[in-house]
Amino acid sequence: MPATFGELEGLSVTVDRVAFMPQVPAPPDKPFAFVYFITIHNGSTETVTIRGRKWVVSDLNGETIVVEGDGVVGQTPKLEPGQTFSYNSHHVIATDSVAEGAYIGITESGQPVVVRIPRFEMLSPESE
Image (cartoon, rainbow, N blue to C red; front, side, top):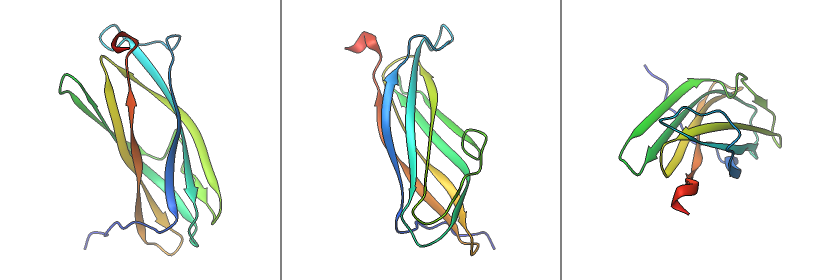
């Protein structure tokens, strides 16, 4: 029987900052690089290990890219109650885009959990 993923009260994500970074290499078809800074907060009473992620990036042209993978920036952070995990990564885009998603984790007692990544915008300098 497949595991049922649930939310865990107190486990949350904040998007701390999103910044256009023209110095980050980007391909010609997606010339705008944005670095985002994320913090995963474990305000629950459970220890949680983040095992994977899923991002959905949608742009003004109607293109949607789904990125799924193991861990977070090559790590599987284990968060004790009260701990946080902060990191930064980036997306490259062709035009104004929004990103959102979720992290998938497991509690020490074996319960699969999911926590949403809040939606955030990446606005190309051409749109400003």
